[in-house]
Length: 606
Image (cartoon, rainbow, N blue to C red; front, side):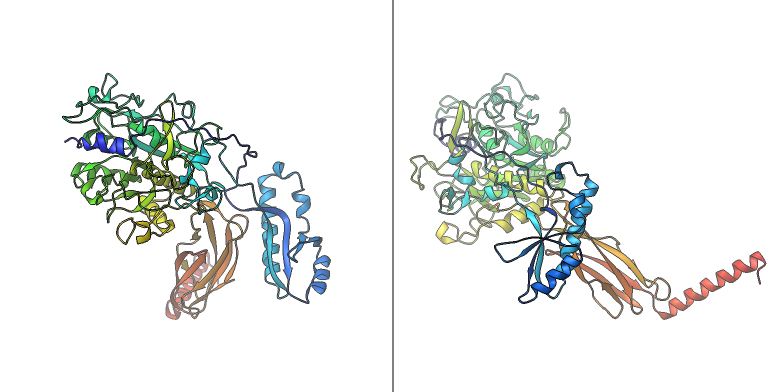
């Protein structure tokens, strides 16, 4: 079965646009040096900010000084900055960079312990570490100012009402080179100035079986270079017009982040650090389901006959392609296999301005189907498909509008042969979602495809009828990134707590809090049991130490079963508690006594 010729004329032309590639130039601007933002909040070791309650400061200050706390200075907010005794020597100012990991961990732990102790005092309003912040990350790519689709959502300077709030996310997460996104499309322009030498480009594959369709003289091979998909009039069927090459795959991959963002060349991508695997399935007059489904499985690291296994399995697959008809079984089975291999599959909704349920793979189960929005943040009603099959909407642009009045069409700017071009279409919307999905995975590697979708939809900016999105039309709304930071995860050291009522009446447990996969220091933890008459836990609340752990003790009160619960930042964990009742305990005591007696008898003791 072959995809409809609509794939060639509508998908690649309309999803791209009929505009010829254009060169865009932006005024040169200067940026500050690059900074690496830590994975977890940093603070100055040994420094604690304290705010006293009214009329208590004088006496408390003297008490703190007697304990060895050094007064540093008063802040503009009325707080006092103190130095924790002994920590300054361990982590001297100006030498943080050469301090050992163990010394730094000890200093952080000591600081957090003083924060905890001060916070518990009745004369202290609040206490906190002296946190460190960093300059806001911004790409130095000269065409970035033209990429309105990335901007903070708003109407002020450097904002756009259709932006997806990427800049705040870049402050803490610009991607992860260990995360792979497969772009199943027309291939890649290896010699493009913004691609050549990019560490974000991983080896791809050409899955086009038909040499004529491939337009490169042969069938399947390991060369994913886009040789062009231009056709003459009637070449793809009677009445089909001539069309120049779209360079569609490079445009899509550019949005995901195949180019090296921050290299002072061209455009920025959603991800600054990612591995993009280009898979060539679309050539002259489109591509076939067989080639596409093989590419889907190969992208996910699954075996394909006659092809070596992909050494870079994708966590996210982007397919800015489609055709009319409900989801075929071949498509669905390939998608099911990819999702089972832990790859999230992002697809374009299509560009016929109709219900996406009549198109594949947009109507397939298990995919993230993306409709397109314009500069205003409205559904691009001129072309975008819509309906219940859509999970979310993202910037696809509209080259027939100029809503920001800058004299340039409101398309999505990305890579094409010879430069950069403004295209519009759900093909341009999908890689925004794929790129953001890769940021989510970079932040939390354990995310499943279902969790990725849930997170995307939870973050989405709600749309309504005034945006062309009455209920059931645009999914969860407009893609929104914001600060990409997954909620903390909480684990309890013991899978279950067994307490002996008359022997070991207590057991030490620890709660570990992680954020973005890393231990989170200073996280507030609360602990409780379902039934305090059976078992209690102390302390019931506190902050994690430098290793992200909080220690507590569970103590038995009477026989029975209950549950220990831990909570931090909305994340929870639980462990069952079992305390044997009195009869069982007595039997245990008798059995233990009998064993002791028998042991003595065996030794001849009296």
